[in-house]
Image 1 (tube, rainbow, N blue to C red):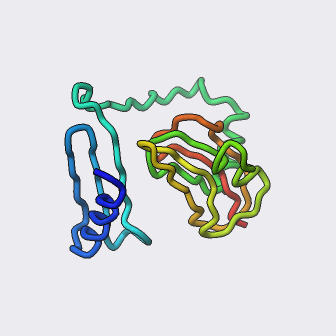
Image 2 (cartoon, rainbow, N blue to C red):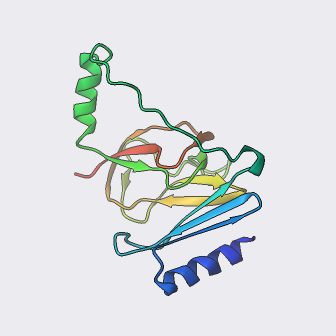
Length: 161
């Protein structure tokens, strides 16, 4: 399935009024979610899964431990609560630059506005520009360049004020 087919599928699902469509073919899984809760374009997640390893993954939450929380981490968590976290919409490899010979999209302290490109995430040889949905100032970049990222992993902290 090529990019044109995926784009046509997204348009078809958006027009059909379906809330969610999942398509599984050989080693590709596509999930398209639309609905009244979602603002903007339909969300599409494309995942390359080897069928021999298609086992459900269980994520375990660490047990709360009162002794593990230090005062400095509690202060940091309180400070970070005023910031908005920009999370990864897809699984892939995080890049801060559009190409190796170009400058980074943003730095700590950069002012951003809605629609500004923050980074690129490569998934299945496709480079997806991640645009800002908010305006503000970049406070912290949470991921190293060329690092793998998971779906919903925090990428940036933004001060909306």
